[in-house]
Length: 207
Image (cartoon, rainbow, N blue to C red; front, top):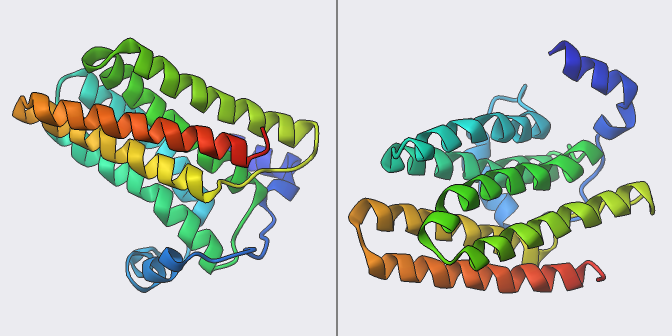
């Protein structure tokens, strides 16, 4: 906690709340349902940090072959990606910290699952493609932040990509649990589709 507070004191501008430029339709649905269950003291940045801290638990469960529990925990952790964004936009609690670290938290979670599952059950080239694109997103984000002093927010293509990746991971875990080659093939196709949306998202960012 001391480290976090020290970081906030050194970079207060990263934690200043800003008004959301746009609120998506699903944000209103989240506001009427799941966001009502979140205590008012909880901030979007705290949810993002929770996702980062919970990722090692997912890694541990999957690494030890506990696919059923690991799948449930992964799905719950991945769902926080929808929570922090919707909370930030509907409550005008958008921060530069959240804009930078929310996508990093997503990539950490997905990257972990790629290392554990994709390289094990699919063509390694598929895993390399996914990781390469995620690294490209990170590099573009840092270049924009430090060179152009701008922070790029995730576009709709990137959000679809993330949704497809989460779906593919869940289908993969279900395939392993049920020993279903058909579901593994389906998961591979979904991962491939996610790669397509990732490429579109990169071009939409101006590459």
